[in-house]
Length: 206
Image (cartoon, rainbow, N blue to C red):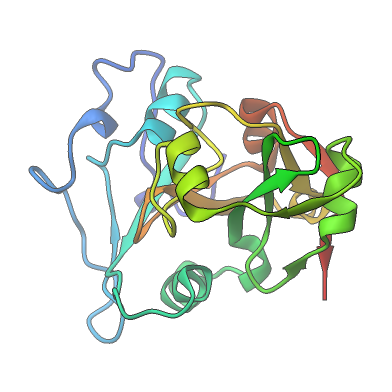
């Protein structure tokens, strides 16, 4: 169980009855958590493919939103600045999702803490390829069904091979993109790994 139940989005086994299927733009059930700086809210009515994946799996999770600034230079850093202090998290608990192109020609995903950089060599080895490079934005968006800055490791249009950095298992809970800019999912690392069918390896550097 997650601590601090007032933040919890209760997830039942029935995805039809679950409130997370409602669109946050049309029917936001918001509770403001911050009156200055970033606007942080609990999104009990949010719905994205990533969130629906968790609902179908009956995986315990919470959805957190913050006001996305389109001028932001780094989507991951923006999420850390908005959420880490308010939720009482270490910045290393907030993970980013990077889409890679392997030397084999296929796409893959690496999930690692925002403050860390990715070792392409380690990621390629974990994914069984000689080399890896960052994927082209258009390819990444077309394959996952998400836009850059809102790419989630969950609920992708085409499920890609995934590696999750081994540091995820240090934490009781981690955050990753919910599939929309300014929207993050809080969940247990074991559920993230299970639902993405990920391999776990030390791929973060720096």
